Length: 188
Ligand code: GAR
Image (cartoon, rainbow, N blue to C red; front, top):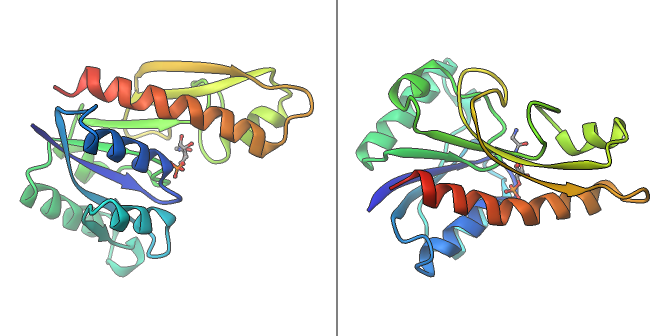
């Protein structure tokens, strides 16, 4: 079984979806060693407790530098023999320390049809540009913001009277199918 760590900063519904599929046996080739989060009030923490998954909470501001923060994460990842890092709403750029240690072994999901609308609030950006379609992308992580090579995408419509919440719910329902499918294919 391949050991993976999931990194999240927010509500953690993608983390929950992946973890439930692991626990139901649907994603049987991976084991989630822990949830790694950079916020002590993130919703993903309660989800991890409910799923009996260990949680590491580390805030960058408690370290002298981002390198020191990532060096600490790297120690934890090595202790847990983690082979892949799965970013699920981790709203921070991965720095050199983790990139060098996990080159080609970090996946991210982003709520747009990349290369369009990188960065924060991708759904708001698509709405501001009056797009009639958006979607989600799973990609490898490099040093840029949502720039690594694309593995898979799924698209959906944006209708005229859609609110931000409407589009977000539609995109997340795509993410809940796409991310486990890619993980299952890529991580053996
Ligand atoms: C997801 O929609 C994910 O694509 C996005 O954050 C959301 C997290 O939701 N990630 C990014 O925007 C990365 N640039 P969740 O916490 O409910 O899984």
